[in-house]
Amino acid sequence: MTASQDQVPLFHFDTRTFLGGRRPSRDERRALGVAARKAVPVAELARVPEASQRADTLSILRAQDASREQSLVPLRYERMAVSAFTFLRGSAAVMAHDLSLVSSSGVRVQLCGDAHVANFGMFASAERTLVFDINDFDETLPGSFDWDVRRLAASAAVGVLDQGGSKKKARKAAKAAATAYRTVMAALSQMPTLDVWNLKVNADYLMSRFEGGDFRKATQRAIDKSKRSTSATAASKLTERVNGHQRFRNDPPLLVRLSEEDHGTWIDRIAPAYDQYLKTLPPDRVALLSHYSFVDMAHKVVGVGSVGTRAFVMLLESGDGEPLVLQIKQAMESVLEKYQGKSEFDNHGERVVVGQRVMQTTGDPLLGWVKSSGAEGLDFYVRQLKDLKGSIDMTRLDADGFVDYARVCGATMARSHARVGDSSMVTGYLGEDESFDEAIAEFAMGYVKITDLDHGALLAWLATDDKTQERL
Image 1 (spheres, rainbow, N blue to C red):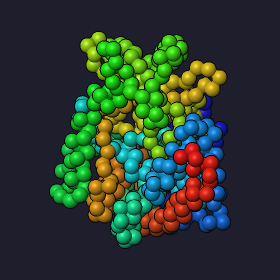
Image 2: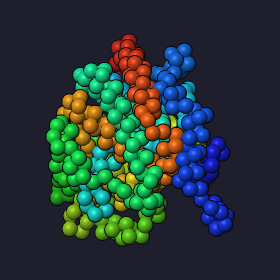
Image 3: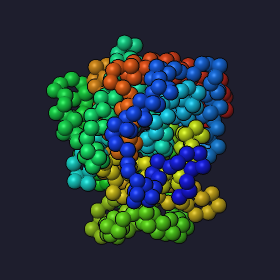
Image 4: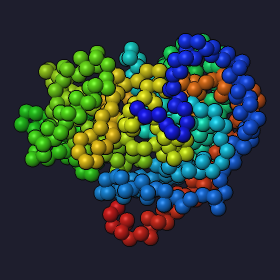
């Protein structure tokens, strides 16, 4: 790893302080947050950039195209064009630029970096119970905590409006996310350090908090779906049996199996990369994977903003034919690095993995990273494709259900930030009244207008760009 030249790494460990110094108390850390609030009042967080300040949105998006699979770039824009919400999902780079133009708290935590409401979901804990947490860390980086909160609140507001809700409900959802974040962070600041580190949100607990309504129904559906989401079900959907052997289906451009001619070449390329990956895992996980052998590999398109980045699926089988599907996903420079400082990790796959490990209380046991061979030397992270994973279907939520969902996401984010960030310092900045909540809600509604304008600009460009239309 290489230390950032811009800021002290969040994971920096000072041995001299550890051996001979004293860590500041909760009250002292809270006072630092209060001082930060005086330097940048919470009311400043309500501001969105002026139109004259902003860079051209399409230029920011198209600058990302150069490092992607060119044949898939039109699909990325097609998915972003569906609605204002899908546009927001795919335009993390645009929002990062916009946030750099307005004031931030300066109180640093480990950021998700792309904390919209669709990047939360359920997956299996080490005890095989379902937990609810942030589930996308492609843009993770240390930075000012309010960047995550503002993206979350804006996405909640845009989501409500996309579902046909009123502006009043949209604002309520944004404020609910901010209020939950503030109140949960305050509670965490009073808890023992180890308790905060080990705290997780179980799906069953989530259900118990809501007696009725659309959110409870959507949560139950997500739980039921998650329990059916395993490597076996992934294999059954993505593979077929040919001449007595399982192999990936061919469904271009979404799923493209490696050709028979390339199979031997790929095995030669996979071997050293897989060895690299195993070295990033604890010995017990390596022992687990020793029960499986390689069967097949394919390209698989994923997400909205990620479309065009290199992503593969690898089919493994135990000696008894039990499938295990791994996803190998390209990790590029975080969109936050230009504004929050360079990553301290040389490999962006490692950046993603470390960010996920520190923000999630429990996570994928097979999470690791690798750098590809060859001249490009691309960074990747590796994870299970399915492991009791599922998400809340937001299209099934009414406006009140969306408010409940935004509240849960805000609370969950507070727990994630508090694991490595300083909950007392953040709480000192947030204060005890609703000033922060109101400022975030105001920002969210201002950013709704920006998102609508940017989405409209994308639609206009797609309608007039003949070459793009032909490729779509």
